[in-house]
Amino acid sequence: MRLRLHEISRNPQVIIHFFRQNPLLLICLLILVIVSLPLAYLLLRGIASGAAGIEYLLQPRTITIFWNSLVLTGIVVFASGIIGITFAWLTTRVTLPFRRIILVLGLLPMVIPSYIGSLTLVTAFGPVGYLQQLLEPLGIRRLPEIYGLFGASFALTLFTYPYFVLPVRAAIITLDQSLEEAAQSLGYSRWEIFWRVTLPILRPSIAAGAILTALYTLSDFGAVMVMRYNAFSRAIYVSYNSSFDRNRAALLALVLVAFTLFLTWLERRMSAAIRTYRVGKGTGRQVKSVSAGKWQVPAIIFLCILIGIGVLFPIGILLSWALNPYVRSPIDMKLEEASWNAITTSGITALVTAITAVPLSVLARQSTSKLIQGLLSLTYIGNALPGIVIGLALVFFGANVFPAIYQTLPLLILGYTIRFLPYSVASTNSALAGLSPSLEETAQSLGLNIGQRLLRVTLPLTWVGLIAGMGLVFLNTMKELPTTLMLAPIGFTTPATRIWMANEAGQLALIGLPGLILIALSCVGLFILLWRDSGST
Image (cartoon, rainbow, N blue to C red; front, top):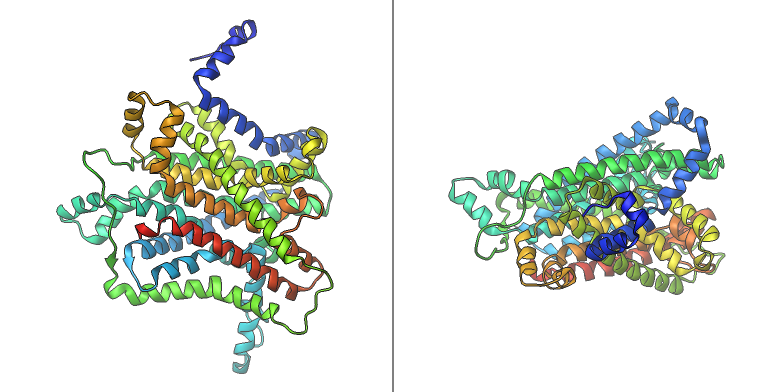
């Protein structure tokens, strides 16, 4: 149904009737208005900069920042994709000893905040780090610098490859074995089956992992700051906190928004280019694990190196700091209260984002309108923006428009939801991509309305992707720092804010205990996440 402006102006009842016929669209538009608040804030700041802002964007320094971010994102997405897809395949399709333990350990890097992980990597592999101390008897006085593009790429790859693992693994679990058996009956080898049958079917999940990794890389502040790499997030932070020029920082953030919209468009093109659901008659059968054969030893070596560098080294360094008998905290850390705050807010945020993502993903699946698809791309903006931008935007609107929620938990959860909604949306989109439209059409022909179809058909068949999205949101909310610092009520603390407090005090050793608590709490979340699909692996 199309609405004309003169019809609306003469008869507002037309709008009411339209949205009664399209309740899903109304819900999604309301969600989009809320998640677009940071964009509105940036536009206000960008317009205020005037002609000087355009001149600033065209300066060589700004172009260099954009290029640096583009190169970093490309390297991290490519490297994380190779590692993440390989890891997901080995822990889902290949029979390996202690596979579930390996899976949990391999996913732990995603719960380590990038600023903590980068600090531990510098401590271990820096010019005068632990590795250099071990090599000093050999005459090595100083190792090469780890800072710059190499260090930022290395750190972000270690902490983002799990964003490929979860959606790809969810797709592998629900893969129909009959497709591979059909290819095998045509004489394809196992390698040919993977490249020509399995990998194309996994493409929507790979695209989801790629965009999550890209968004994380673009918005990350900790790794680029520690590794001294001048990317967008670092430049925005410097503009906000050093030069106090919020208009310039807003312009840089708007460039990030434009880049995000391009990435979401590219992800939709990749996901829509192939059908991944079953169209034939009969019941699909899940794939079975296969023996690694002669590749078992190389696979185990690969997994051990990955877990050693990404998990054991950071945790070992945190332990050494926490167990240092000479460290005394000058402040009361109140870690019990901080831990409870993190668990409750992370759980609520995970539930809210999951509920919010379902209508957005269903509308994206059903609608063929380019306008609707473009509007839905706005849901990805929050995760591309540094937390400081979202925090400032909500502080602005909270203090000036909605003072009743200023410095309250609802505003904090709203900030978390805007920031991490893309994780739920991407995972839900990936799950829906494997659901045949004929199932929903059949339910509709039986007289089920849209709500009944969601509860009785769509959600039961896509729960793996939904749980994966909730796990991603929970884990990222646990370690979120800038949004928490700016939006939390007075006196509200989390382990992440305690870590920040210790870093501000210049006492890295005090990071050890809250860092370990943060990892332990997130580890519980991972166990809950992976327990749901334990029967499928």
